[in-house]
Length: 151
Image (cartoon, rainbow, N blue to C red):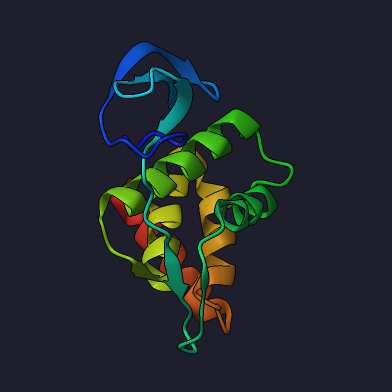
């Protein structure tokens, strides 16, 4: 680590401790040339995710949109908010771990439906009806029949 005072490239770590609720590490360093002390922070580099929409447009990933869609689907259903937050965090982690920079919105929608199906089937059908843009009652019934056959 380069010293901010003299520019020397060697330093020793005096103290390390977690910072920002364990999101980074704060390190106290001492320059081996001028003996002045300075602080550095070490954080995990996250890959910025870009969502490719159905129309081909791109926008940055927003976990809040996933959570908002699930909240609407679970309206008046006995699904705790903590469960929805857990699902949205898990989906974000899956996407980050995939190491893909661009994710199609269809992939995200399928992940949400897959997890909602296990939590609440009514919420799953609600989400699927909006996500898959059910045009008529036949499409709706096809999805319900598929859901019942999986039981």
